[in-house]
Length: 591
Image 1: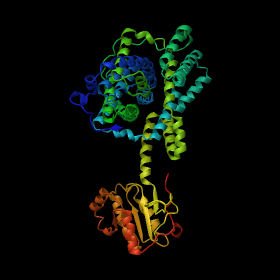
Image 2 (image 1 turned 180 degrees about the vertical axis):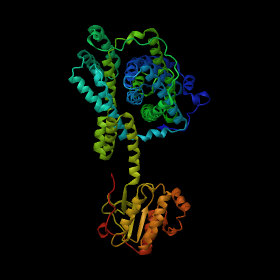
Image 3 (image 1 turned 120 degrees about the vertical axis):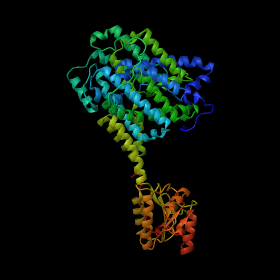
Image 4 (image 1 turned 30 degrees about the horizontal axis):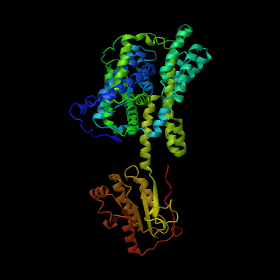
Protein backbone atom coordinates (compact mmCIF):
# COMPACT_ATOMS: atom_id res chain seq x y z
CA UNK A 1 0.00 0.00 0.00
CA UNK A 2 1.42 3.40 -0.98
CA UNK A 3 0.87 6.36 1.28
CA UNK A 4 1.85 9.87 0.27
CA UNK A 5 0.56 12.29 2.83
CA UNK A 6 0.51 11.15 6.44
CA UNK A 7 3.21 10.51 9.00
CA UNK A 8 3.31 7.32 11.04
CA UNK A 9 2.13 7.37 14.60
CA UNK A 10 4.74 8.71 16.98
CA UNK A 11 6.59 10.69 14.31
CA UNK A 12 7.29 13.88 16.21
CA UNK A 13 10.18 16.32 16.51
CA UNK A 14 13.34 15.39 14.64
CA UNK A 15 12.01 11.89 14.07
CA UNK A 16 9.31 13.31 11.82
CA UNK A 17 11.85 14.89 9.46
CA UNK A 18 14.76 12.47 9.98
CA UNK A 19 13.41 8.91 10.23
CA UNK A 20 16.87 7.63 11.20
CA UNK A 21 16.50 9.31 14.62
CA UNK A 22 13.19 7.54 15.11
CA UNK A 23 14.85 4.21 14.27
CA UNK A 24 17.58 4.84 16.86
CA UNK A 25 15.03 5.80 19.50
CA UNK A 26 13.02 2.62 18.95
CA UNK A 27 15.92 0.26 18.31
CA UNK A 28 15.77 -3.17 19.95
CA UNK A 29 18.83 -4.96 21.26
CA UNK A 30 17.63 -8.21 19.68
CA UNK A 31 18.05 -6.66 16.23
CA UNK A 32 21.75 -5.82 16.64
CA UNK A 33 23.28 -9.20 15.77
CA UNK A 34 21.04 -9.63 12.73
CA UNK A 35 21.83 -6.13 11.42
CA UNK A 36 25.58 -6.63 11.93
CA UNK A 37 25.61 -9.98 10.12
CA UNK A 38 23.41 -8.64 7.29
CA UNK A 39 25.72 -5.62 6.93
CA UNK A 40 28.80 -7.83 6.61
CA UNK A 41 27.12 -10.05 4.04
CA UNK A 42 25.84 -7.03 2.12
CA UNK A 43 29.32 -5.47 1.94
CA UNK A 44 30.56 -8.44 -0.08
CA UNK A 45 28.12 -7.43 -2.82
CA UNK A 46 28.47 -3.66 -2.45
CA UNK A 47 32.19 -3.51 -3.27
CA UNK A 48 32.35 -5.29 -6.64
CA UNK A 49 29.01 -3.92 -7.84
CA UNK A 50 29.91 -0.37 -6.80
CA UNK A 51 33.15 -0.52 -8.78
CA UNK A 52 31.51 -2.17 -11.79
CA UNK A 53 28.65 0.34 -11.97
CA UNK A 54 31.10 3.23 -11.69
CA UNK A 55 32.88 2.00 -14.81
CA UNK A 56 29.49 1.53 -16.47
CA UNK A 57 28.93 5.24 -15.87
CA UNK A 58 32.32 6.02 -17.41
CA UNK A 59 33.96 6.88 -14.06
CA UNK A 60 36.94 5.48 -12.07
CA UNK A 61 36.02 2.40 -9.97
CA UNK A 62 36.90 4.15 -6.70
CA UNK A 63 34.02 6.58 -7.16
CA UNK A 64 31.61 3.64 -6.97
CA UNK A 65 32.84 2.88 -3.47
CA UNK A 66 32.63 6.53 -2.38
CA UNK A 67 29.11 6.69 -3.79
CA UNK A 68 28.06 3.50 -2.05
CA UNK A 69 29.31 4.65 1.37
CA UNK A 70 27.62 8.03 1.44
CA UNK A 71 24.51 6.91 -0.40
CA UNK A 72 23.93 4.34 2.34
CA UNK A 73 24.60 6.85 5.13
CA UNK A 74 22.36 9.53 3.61
CA UNK A 75 19.46 7.14 3.14
CA UNK A 76 19.92 5.67 6.63
CA UNK A 77 19.17 9.11 8.06
CA UNK A 78 16.34 10.26 5.80
CA UNK A 79 14.89 7.11 4.20
CA UNK A 80 11.55 5.69 5.34
CA UNK A 81 12.13 1.99 4.63
CA UNK A 82 13.79 -0.17 7.26
CA UNK A 83 15.75 -2.37 4.86
CA UNK A 84 15.83 -0.69 1.43
CA UNK A 85 19.41 -0.52 0.10
CA UNK A 86 20.54 2.50 -1.91
CA UNK A 87 23.63 2.81 -4.09
CA UNK A 88 25.03 2.78 -7.64
CA UNK A 89 22.59 1.11 -10.01
CA UNK A 90 22.96 -0.63 -13.35
CA UNK A 91 19.91 1.17 -14.78
CA UNK A 92 21.40 4.60 -14.02
CA UNK A 93 24.94 3.88 -15.26
CA UNK A 94 24.22 4.31 -18.98
CA UNK A 95 22.15 7.43 -18.25
CA UNK A 96 25.01 9.01 -16.31
CA UNK A 97 27.43 8.18 -19.13
CA UNK A 98 24.98 9.61 -21.68
CA UNK A 99 24.97 12.90 -19.76
CA UNK A 100 28.73 13.12 -19.15
CA UNK A 101 30.21 11.97 -22.47
CA UNK A 102 28.78 14.85 -24.57
CA UNK A 103 30.31 17.30 -22.09
CA UNK A 104 33.65 15.65 -21.31
CA UNK A 105 34.09 13.63 -24.49
CA UNK A 106 34.87 9.94 -24.81
CA UNK A 107 38.07 9.19 -22.90
CA UNK A 108 38.12 12.69 -21.39
CA UNK A 109 39.78 13.81 -18.18
CA UNK A 110 38.46 11.53 -15.38
CA UNK A 111 38.89 14.31 -12.82
CA UNK A 112 36.57 16.57 -14.82
CA UNK A 113 34.11 13.70 -15.27
CA UNK A 114 34.11 13.03 -11.52
CA UNK A 115 33.37 16.69 -10.79
CA UNK A 116 30.50 16.78 -13.26
CA UNK A 117 29.12 13.47 -11.95
CA UNK A 118 29.10 14.93 -8.45
CA UNK A 119 27.19 17.97 -9.66
CA UNK A 120 24.77 15.64 -11.46
CA UNK A 121 24.23 13.75 -8.20
CA UNK A 122 23.58 17.01 -6.38
CA UNK A 123 21.02 18.09 -8.98
CA UNK A 124 19.29 14.70 -8.85
CA UNK A 125 19.26 14.85 -5.07
CA UNK A 126 17.83 18.36 -4.92
CA UNK A 127 15.21 17.52 -7.57
CA UNK A 128 14.20 14.34 -5.79
CA UNK A 129 14.07 15.98 -2.36
CA UNK A 130 12.07 18.94 -3.69
CA UNK A 131 9.61 16.54 -5.34
CA UNK A 132 9.25 14.71 -2.03
CA UNK A 133 8.63 17.92 -0.11
CA UNK A 134 6.05 18.95 -2.72
CA UNK A 135 4.42 15.50 -2.41
CA UNK A 136 4.93 14.63 -6.07
CA UNK A 137 5.25 10.89 -5.57
CA UNK A 138 2.64 10.35 -8.26
CA UNK A 139 5.33 11.21 -10.84
CA UNK A 140 6.32 7.55 -10.60
CA UNK A 141 3.10 6.78 -12.50
CA UNK A 142 4.47 8.52 -15.61
CA UNK A 143 6.02 5.21 -16.63
CA UNK A 144 3.39 2.56 -17.28
CA UNK A 145 4.28 -1.12 -16.90
CA UNK A 146 4.57 -1.77 -20.67
CA UNK A 147 6.88 1.22 -21.15
CA UNK A 148 8.93 0.19 -18.10
CA UNK A 149 9.38 -3.28 -19.59
CA UNK A 150 10.38 -1.87 -22.96
CA UNK A 151 12.70 0.72 -21.43
CA UNK A 152 14.43 -1.86 -19.22
CA UNK A 153 14.80 -4.29 -22.13
CA UNK A 154 16.41 -1.54 -24.19
CA UNK A 155 18.63 -0.64 -21.27
CA UNK A 156 19.68 -4.27 -20.84
CA UNK A 157 20.64 -4.49 -24.52
CA UNK A 158 22.54 -1.17 -24.31
CA UNK A 159 24.52 -2.37 -21.29
CA UNK A 160 25.20 -5.79 -22.78
CA UNK A 161 26.52 -4.45 -26.07
CA UNK A 162 28.57 -1.76 -24.30
CA UNK A 163 30.27 -4.30 -21.99
CA UNK A 164 31.08 -6.96 -24.59
CA UNK A 165 34.36 -5.32 -25.68
CA UNK A 166 35.51 -5.19 -22.04
CA UNK A 167 34.62 -8.86 -21.64
CA UNK A 168 36.83 -9.64 -24.66
CA UNK A 169 39.71 -7.49 -23.43
CA UNK A 170 39.58 -4.45 -25.74
CA UNK A 171 37.74 -1.15 -26.02
CA UNK A 172 35.54 0.50 -28.63
CA UNK A 173 35.20 4.22 -29.31
CA UNK A 174 31.60 4.50 -30.55
CA UNK A 175 28.20 5.82 -29.52
CA UNK A 176 24.87 4.00 -29.47
CA UNK A 177 24.00 0.33 -29.62
CA UNK A 178 24.50 0.04 -33.38
CA UNK A 179 27.83 1.89 -33.32
CA UNK A 180 29.14 -0.10 -30.38
CA UNK A 181 27.98 -3.41 -31.90
CA UNK A 182 29.67 -2.55 -35.19
CA UNK A 183 32.86 -1.53 -33.36
CA UNK A 184 32.82 -4.75 -31.37
CA UNK A 185 32.49 -6.85 -34.53
CA UNK A 186 35.29 -4.88 -36.21
CA UNK A 187 37.49 -5.46 -33.16
CA UNK A 188 36.82 -9.19 -33.29
CA UNK A 189 37.59 -9.27 -37.02
CA UNK A 190 40.83 -7.36 -36.43
CA UNK A 191 41.94 -9.84 -33.78
CA UNK A 192 41.77 -7.37 -30.87
CA UNK A 193 40.25 -9.91 -28.48
CA UNK A 194 42.50 -11.11 -25.66
CA UNK A 195 41.94 -14.85 -25.00
CA UNK A 196 42.94 -14.61 -21.35
CA UNK A 197 40.56 -11.69 -20.81
CA UNK A 198 37.70 -13.56 -22.45
CA UNK A 199 38.47 -16.62 -20.37
CA UNK A 200 38.39 -14.86 -17.01
CA UNK A 201 35.39 -12.75 -18.06
CA UNK A 202 33.33 -15.76 -19.14
CA UNK A 203 34.37 -17.64 -16.01
CA UNK A 204 33.12 -14.79 -13.83
CA UNK A 205 29.86 -14.47 -15.78
CA UNK A 206 29.12 -18.20 -15.72
CA UNK A 207 29.82 -18.45 -11.98
CA UNK A 208 27.51 -15.49 -11.21
CA UNK A 209 24.64 -16.69 -13.39
CA UNK A 210 24.92 -20.32 -12.27
CA UNK A 211 25.08 -19.54 -8.56
CA UNK A 212 22.24 -17.02 -8.76
CA UNK A 213 20.11 -19.64 -10.48
CA UNK A 214 21.00 -22.78 -8.51
CA UNK A 215 22.15 -21.35 -5.15
CA UNK A 216 20.46 -17.95 -4.82
CA UNK A 217 21.40 -17.56 -1.14
CA UNK A 218 25.13 -17.87 -1.90
CA UNK A 219 27.02 -14.55 -2.51
CA UNK A 220 27.55 -15.24 -6.21
CA UNK A 221 29.27 -11.97 -7.08
CA UNK A 222 31.74 -12.28 -4.20
CA UNK A 223 32.67 -15.85 -5.12
CA UNK A 224 33.06 -14.98 -8.80
CA UNK A 225 35.20 -11.90 -8.07
CA UNK A 226 37.37 -13.82 -5.61
CA UNK A 227 37.83 -16.53 -8.24
CA UNK A 228 38.85 -13.93 -10.84
CA UNK A 229 41.43 -12.44 -8.47
CA UNK A 230 42.76 -15.91 -7.72
CA UNK A 231 43.02 -16.57 -11.47
CA UNK A 232 45.09 -13.41 -11.81
CA UNK A 233 47.56 -14.67 -9.22
CA UNK A 234 47.71 -18.24 -10.50
CA UNK A 235 47.84 -17.52 -14.22
CA UNK A 236 49.63 -14.15 -14.12
CA UNK A 237 46.84 -12.58 -16.17
CA UNK A 238 48.39 -9.12 -15.98
CA UNK A 239 51.27 -10.37 -18.12
CA UNK A 240 48.85 -11.95 -20.59
CA UNK A 241 47.32 -8.67 -21.69
CA UNK A 242 44.44 -8.56 -19.18
CA UNK A 243 43.76 -5.09 -17.75
CA UNK A 244 43.51 -5.00 -13.98
CA UNK A 245 41.79 -2.52 -11.66
CA UNK A 246 45.09 -1.58 -10.03
CA UNK A 247 45.60 -0.01 -6.60
CA UNK A 248 42.77 2.16 -5.27
CA UNK A 249 43.41 5.54 -3.62
CA UNK A 250 44.00 4.97 0.09
CA UNK A 251 42.31 6.82 2.91
CA UNK A 252 38.99 8.46 3.71
CA UNK A 253 36.96 9.78 0.73
CA UNK A 254 37.84 13.45 0.17
CA UNK A 255 35.24 16.14 0.78
CA UNK A 256 34.80 17.94 -2.56
CA UNK A 257 32.32 20.63 -3.48
CA UNK A 258 30.47 19.88 -6.76
CA UNK A 259 31.04 22.46 -9.46
CA UNK A 260 30.18 23.11 -13.11
CA UNK A 261 29.99 26.03 -15.52
CA UNK A 262 26.62 27.56 -16.41
CA UNK A 263 26.66 25.96 -19.86
CA UNK A 264 27.44 22.57 -18.34
CA UNK A 265 24.79 23.07 -15.68
CA UNK A 266 22.02 23.30 -18.27
CA UNK A 267 22.99 19.96 -19.83
CA UNK A 268 23.37 18.36 -16.42
CA UNK A 269 19.96 19.60 -15.32
CA UNK A 270 18.25 18.02 -18.33
CA UNK A 271 19.92 14.71 -17.54
CA UNK A 272 19.07 15.05 -13.85
CA UNK A 273 15.36 15.24 -14.64
CA UNK A 274 15.48 12.00 -16.65
CA UNK A 275 17.52 10.22 -13.98
CA UNK A 276 15.10 11.45 -11.31
CA UNK A 277 12.09 9.97 -13.12
CA UNK A 278 13.80 6.58 -13.56
CA UNK A 279 15.15 6.57 -9.99
CA UNK A 280 11.78 7.57 -8.57
CA UNK A 281 9.94 4.85 -10.47
CA UNK A 282 12.50 2.26 -9.39
CA UNK A 283 12.38 3.45 -5.78
CA UNK A 284 8.59 3.32 -5.46
CA UNK A 285 8.29 -0.07 -7.16
CA UNK A 286 11.12 -1.61 -5.11
CA UNK A 287 9.88 -0.13 -1.84
CA UNK A 288 6.33 -1.31 -2.59
CA UNK A 289 7.49 -4.86 -3.38
CA UNK A 290 9.43 -5.27 -0.13
CA UNK A 291 6.88 -3.44 2.02
CA UNK A 292 4.13 -5.75 0.75
CA UNK A 293 6.00 -8.75 2.16
CA UNK A 294 5.86 -7.35 5.69
CA UNK A 295 2.52 -5.54 5.50
CA UNK A 296 4.14 -2.10 5.79
CA UNK A 297 3.05 1.09 4.06
CA UNK A 298 5.20 2.88 1.52
CA UNK A 299 5.57 6.57 2.27
CA UNK A 300 6.36 7.64 -1.29
CA UNK A 301 7.18 11.25 -0.49
CA UNK A 302 9.56 10.34 2.35
CA UNK A 303 11.24 7.75 0.11
CA UNK A 304 11.88 10.53 -2.39
CA UNK A 305 13.43 12.65 0.36
CA UNK A 306 15.55 9.70 1.48
CA UNK A 307 16.93 8.93 -1.98
CA UNK A 308 17.40 12.67 -2.52
CA UNK A 309 19.45 12.88 0.67
CA UNK A 310 21.52 9.87 -0.45
CA UNK A 311 22.36 11.63 -3.73
CA UNK A 312 23.21 14.89 -2.00
CA UNK A 313 25.48 13.13 0.50
CA UNK A 314 27.28 11.25 -2.28
CA UNK A 315 27.73 14.43 -4.32
CA UNK A 316 30.07 15.97 -1.71
CA UNK A 317 32.42 12.98 -1.77
CA UNK A 318 33.06 12.50 -5.51
CA UNK A 319 29.95 10.38 -5.87
CA UNK A 320 27.43 10.05 -8.70
CA UNK A 321 23.62 9.54 -8.81
CA UNK A 322 22.20 6.59 -6.89
CA UNK A 323 18.94 4.72 -6.69
CA UNK A 324 17.47 1.79 -4.80
CA UNK A 325 18.60 -1.74 -5.62
CA UNK A 326 16.19 -4.65 -5.57
CA UNK A 327 18.97 -7.27 -5.67
CA UNK A 328 20.96 -5.77 -2.79
CA UNK A 329 17.79 -5.18 -0.77
CA UNK A 330 16.88 -8.84 -1.29
CA UNK A 331 20.33 -9.87 -0.01
CA UNK A 332 19.88 -7.67 3.07
CA UNK A 333 16.41 -9.12 3.72
CA UNK A 334 17.57 -12.73 3.28
CA UNK A 335 20.48 -12.05 5.65
CA UNK A 336 18.11 -10.96 8.41
CA UNK A 337 18.33 -7.16 8.20
CA UNK A 338 15.98 -5.36 10.56
CA UNK A 339 16.92 -1.67 10.17
CA UNK A 340 19.13 0.71 8.22
CA UNK A 341 21.99 -0.17 10.57
CA UNK A 342 22.64 -2.90 8.00
CA UNK A 343 23.53 -0.25 5.42
CA UNK A 344 25.61 1.69 7.96
CA UNK A 345 27.61 -1.47 8.72
CA UNK A 346 28.14 -2.04 4.99
CA UNK A 347 29.39 1.53 4.57
CA UNK A 348 31.73 1.12 7.57
CA UNK A 349 33.23 -2.08 6.11
CA UNK A 350 33.99 -0.29 2.83
CA UNK A 351 35.60 2.63 4.68
CA UNK A 352 37.77 0.27 6.69
CA UNK A 353 38.86 -1.45 3.49
CA UNK A 354 39.79 1.89 1.90
CA UNK A 355 41.76 2.99 4.96
CA UNK A 356 43.41 -0.29 5.97
CA UNK A 357 43.68 -2.49 2.85
CA UNK A 358 43.21 -0.31 -0.26
CA UNK A 359 45.22 -2.78 -2.37
CA UNK A 360 42.85 -5.67 -1.71
CA UNK A 361 41.24 -5.44 -5.16
CA UNK A 362 44.23 -4.29 -7.22
CA UNK A 363 44.42 -7.63 -9.07
CA UNK A 364 40.73 -7.73 -10.00
CA UNK A 365 40.53 -8.14 -13.83
CA UNK A 366 38.54 -5.54 -15.72
CA UNK A 367 36.75 -8.26 -17.72
CA UNK A 368 35.44 -9.59 -14.41
CA UNK A 369 33.87 -6.19 -13.68
CA UNK A 370 32.37 -6.30 -17.15
CA UNK A 371 30.90 -9.71 -16.33
CA UNK A 372 29.35 -8.31 -13.13
CA UNK A 373 27.66 -5.58 -15.17
CA UNK A 374 26.50 -8.01 -17.87
CA UNK A 375 24.97 -10.27 -15.21
CA UNK A 376 23.12 -7.25 -13.84
CA UNK A 377 21.90 -6.32 -17.34
CA UNK A 378 20.45 -9.80 -17.78
CA UNK A 379 18.38 -9.28 -14.64
CA UNK A 380 17.00 -6.01 -16.05
CA UNK A 381 15.53 -7.66 -19.13
CA UNK A 382 11.98 -8.98 -18.82
CA UNK A 383 11.39 -11.23 -21.82
CA UNK A 384 8.55 -13.18 -20.13
CA UNK A 385 6.84 -9.85 -19.41
CA UNK A 386 7.12 -8.89 -23.07
CA UNK A 387 5.63 -12.22 -24.17
CA UNK A 388 2.83 -11.75 -21.65
CA UNK A 389 2.01 -8.35 -23.16
CA UNK A 390 1.86 -9.94 -26.63
CA UNK A 391 -0.60 -12.52 -25.41
CA UNK A 392 -2.75 -10.19 -23.34
CA UNK A 393 -2.87 -6.94 -25.29
CA UNK A 394 -1.09 -6.31 -28.58
CA UNK A 395 -1.33 -2.54 -28.38
CA UNK A 396 0.56 -2.42 -25.07
CA UNK A 397 3.07 -4.85 -26.55
CA UNK A 398 3.68 -2.37 -29.37
CA UNK A 399 4.08 0.44 -26.83
CA UNK A 400 6.69 -1.67 -25.04
CA UNK A 401 8.54 -2.38 -28.28
CA UNK A 402 8.50 1.33 -29.17
CA UNK A 403 10.07 2.18 -25.80
CA UNK A 404 12.66 -0.57 -26.35
CA UNK A 405 13.57 0.75 -29.80
CA UNK A 406 13.71 4.31 -28.47
CA UNK A 407 16.38 3.34 -25.95
CA UNK A 408 18.26 0.94 -28.22
CA UNK A 409 18.36 3.17 -31.31
CA UNK A 410 18.24 6.75 -30.01
CA UNK A 411 20.03 6.43 -26.69
CA UNK A 412 19.22 6.21 -23.02
CA UNK A 413 18.14 9.79 -22.35
CA UNK A 414 15.97 10.16 -25.47
CA UNK A 415 14.66 6.71 -24.63
CA UNK A 416 13.35 7.78 -21.23
CA UNK A 417 11.67 10.75 -22.88
CA UNK A 418 10.05 8.42 -25.40
CA UNK A 419 8.98 6.04 -22.62
CA UNK A 420 7.32 8.83 -20.63
CA UNK A 421 5.76 10.26 -23.78
CA UNK A 422 4.34 6.88 -24.78
CA UNK A 423 2.86 6.38 -21.32
CA UNK A 424 1.16 9.78 -21.45
CA UNK A 425 -0.05 9.23 -25.02
CA UNK A 426 -1.46 5.84 -24.07
CA UNK A 427 -3.51 7.45 -21.32
CA UNK A 428 -4.58 10.21 -23.68
CA UNK A 429 -5.56 7.62 -26.33
CA UNK A 430 -7.87 5.89 -23.89
CA UNK A 431 -9.56 9.17 -23.03
CA UNK A 432 -9.69 10.29 -26.67
CA UNK A 433 -11.29 7.07 -27.93
CA UNK A 434 -12.84 5.31 -24.92
CA UNK A 435 -15.01 2.25 -24.91
CA UNK A 436 -18.51 3.09 -26.19
CA UNK A 437 -21.51 0.83 -26.35
CA UNK A 438 -25.28 0.56 -26.49
CA UNK A 439 -27.24 -0.89 -23.59
CA UNK A 440 -30.21 -3.23 -23.56
CA UNK A 441 -32.29 -5.21 -21.04
CA UNK A 442 -31.26 -8.88 -20.85
CA UNK A 443 -33.94 -11.35 -19.84
CA UNK A 444 -31.58 -13.30 -17.57
CA UNK A 445 -29.99 -10.42 -15.62
CA UNK A 446 -31.48 -7.41 -13.90
CA UNK A 447 -30.60 -3.94 -15.14
CA UNK A 448 -29.24 -2.62 -18.44
CA UNK A 449 -26.09 -4.11 -19.93
CA UNK A 450 -23.76 -4.04 -22.93
CA UNK A 451 -25.49 -5.54 -25.96
CA UNK A 452 -22.16 -7.04 -27.05
CA UNK A 453 -22.12 -9.14 -23.88
CA UNK A 454 -25.88 -9.80 -24.11
CA UNK A 455 -26.73 -9.86 -27.82
CA UNK A 456 -30.32 -11.00 -27.13
CA UNK A 457 -31.04 -8.06 -24.80
CA UNK A 458 -34.39 -6.36 -25.37
CA UNK A 459 -34.71 -2.74 -26.46
CA UNK A 460 -37.43 -0.13 -26.64
CA UNK A 461 -38.38 1.11 -30.12
CA UNK A 462 -37.34 4.73 -30.54
CA UNK A 463 -35.04 4.67 -27.48
CA UNK A 464 -31.24 4.28 -27.61
CA UNK A 465 -29.27 3.91 -24.37
CA UNK A 466 -25.67 4.93 -25.04
CA UNK A 467 -22.74 4.60 -22.62
CA UNK A 468 -19.48 6.56 -23.02
CA UNK A 469 -16.79 5.29 -20.65
CA UNK A 470 -14.65 8.38 -20.07
CA UNK A 471 -14.74 11.94 -18.80
CA UNK A 472 -16.18 14.22 -21.49
CA UNK A 473 -13.42 16.71 -22.33
CA UNK A 474 -11.93 18.63 -25.22
CA UNK A 475 -9.98 15.57 -26.44
CA UNK A 476 -13.02 13.36 -26.99
CA UNK A 477 -15.91 15.82 -27.38
CA UNK A 478 -15.92 15.36 -31.15
CA UNK A 479 -15.79 11.55 -30.80
CA UNK A 480 -18.85 11.67 -28.52
CA UNK A 481 -20.70 14.06 -30.83
CA UNK A 482 -20.00 12.00 -33.96
CA UNK A 483 -21.18 8.80 -32.31
CA UNK A 484 -24.42 10.38 -31.10
CA UNK A 485 -24.98 11.76 -34.60
CA UNK A 486 -24.58 8.25 -36.04
CA UNK A 487 -27.15 6.96 -33.59
CA UNK A 488 -29.51 9.78 -34.53
CA UNK A 489 -29.26 8.89 -38.25
CA UNK A 490 -30.86 5.47 -37.76
CA UNK A 491 -33.94 4.63 -39.74
CA UNK A 492 -36.36 5.10 -38.12
CA UNK A 493 -34.75 7.91 -36.16
CA UNK A 494 -34.77 7.44 -32.38
CA UNK A 495 -37.03 9.72 -30.34
CA UNK A 496 -34.73 9.68 -27.32
CA UNK A 497 -30.99 9.09 -27.02
CA UNK A 498 -30.31 8.43 -23.34
CA UNK A 499 -26.69 8.81 -22.27
CA UNK A 500 -25.85 6.47 -19.38
CA UNK A 501 -23.52 9.05 -17.86
CA UNK A 502 -22.27 7.30 -14.73
CA UNK A 503 -18.75 6.73 -16.26
CA UNK A 504 -18.58 10.43 -17.24
CA UNK A 505 -16.54 11.81 -14.34
CA UNK A 506 -16.03 15.28 -15.79
CA UNK A 507 -17.40 17.70 -18.37
CA UNK A 508 -15.13 20.58 -19.36
CA UNK A 509 -16.16 23.81 -21.09
CA UNK A 510 -15.37 22.51 -24.58
CA UNK A 511 -17.60 19.48 -24.02
CA UNK A 512 -20.31 21.69 -22.48
CA UNK A 513 -20.42 23.85 -25.60
CA UNK A 514 -20.58 20.70 -27.72
CA UNK A 515 -23.51 19.33 -25.69
CA UNK A 516 -25.45 22.57 -26.10
CA UNK A 517 -24.92 22.63 -29.89
CA UNK A 518 -25.65 18.90 -30.20
CA UNK A 519 -28.88 19.25 -28.22
CA UNK A 520 -30.12 22.01 -30.57
CA UNK A 521 -29.16 19.93 -33.60
CA UNK A 522 -30.99 16.83 -32.36
CA UNK A 523 -34.06 18.79 -31.31
CA UNK A 524 -34.32 20.11 -34.86
CA UNK A 525 -34.40 16.49 -36.07
CA UNK A 526 -37.05 15.49 -33.53
CA UNK A 527 -34.64 13.57 -31.26
CA UNK A 528 -34.16 14.39 -27.58
CA UNK A 529 -30.77 14.16 -25.87
CA UNK A 530 -31.32 12.76 -22.35
CA UNK A 531 -28.76 12.41 -19.54
CA UNK A 532 -29.14 9.79 -16.80
CA UNK A 533 -26.99 8.86 -13.79
CA UNK A 534 -24.90 12.01 -13.87
CA UNK A 535 -22.66 12.22 -10.80
CA UNK A 536 -23.49 15.13 -8.50
CA UNK A 537 -20.18 16.99 -9.05
CA UNK A 538 -20.64 16.74 -12.82
CA UNK A 539 -24.27 17.90 -12.59
CA UNK A 540 -23.16 20.90 -10.55
CA UNK A 541 -20.61 21.78 -13.24
CA UNK A 542 -23.32 21.61 -15.91
CA UNK A 543 -25.50 23.92 -13.81
CA UNK A 544 -22.56 26.29 -13.37
CA UNK A 545 -21.94 26.30 -17.13
CA UNK A 546 -25.58 27.36 -17.63
CA UNK A 547 -26.54 24.22 -19.56
CA UNK A 548 -29.54 23.41 -17.39
CA UNK A 549 -31.50 26.00 -19.39
CA UNK A 550 -30.54 25.14 -22.99
CA UNK A 551 -30.74 21.42 -22.12
CA UNK A 552 -34.32 20.63 -21.11
CA UNK A 553 -34.34 20.15 -17.28
CA UNK A 554 -36.95 17.43 -17.84
CA UNK A 555 -34.30 15.43 -19.70
CA UNK A 556 -32.09 14.87 -16.63
CA UNK A 557 -32.77 11.67 -14.68
CA UNK A 558 -31.02 10.28 -11.60
CA UNK A 559 -31.21 6.69 -12.87
CA UNK A 560 -31.68 4.79 -16.11
CA UNK A 561 -34.80 3.15 -14.69
CA UNK A 562 -36.46 6.54 -14.26
CA UNK A 563 -35.43 7.65 -17.75
CA UNK A 564 -36.87 4.44 -19.26
CA UNK A 565 -40.06 4.74 -17.21
CA UNK A 566 -40.54 8.36 -18.36
CA UNK A 567 -40.02 7.35 -22.01
CA UNK A 568 -42.50 4.48 -21.77
CA UNK A 569 -45.07 6.72 -20.03
CA UNK A 570 -44.72 9.26 -22.84
CA UNK A 571 -44.73 6.84 -25.78
CA UNK A 572 -46.31 3.62 -24.52
CA UNK A 573 -43.42 1.64 -26.08
CA UNK A 574 -42.97 -2.02 -25.17
CA UNK A 575 -39.76 -4.03 -24.95
CA UNK A 576 -38.84 -5.88 -28.15
CA UNK A 577 -36.12 -8.41 -29.09
CA UNK A 578 -32.94 -7.03 -30.61
CA UNK A 579 -33.84 -8.26 -34.11
CA UNK A 580 -36.69 -5.78 -34.20
CA UNK A 581 -34.37 -2.83 -33.63
CA UNK A 582 -31.76 -1.69 -36.15
CA UNK A 583 -28.09 -0.78 -35.64
CA UNK A 584 -25.40 -0.96 -32.98
CA UNK A 585 -22.68 1.29 -31.70
CA UNK A 586 -19.46 0.40 -33.59
CA UNK A 587 -16.95 -1.59 -31.55
CA UNK A 588 -14.14 0.68 -30.31
CA UNK A 589 -12.20 -1.32 -27.72
CA UNK A 590 -8.45 -1.52 -28.32
CA UNK A 591 -8.15 1.27 -30.86
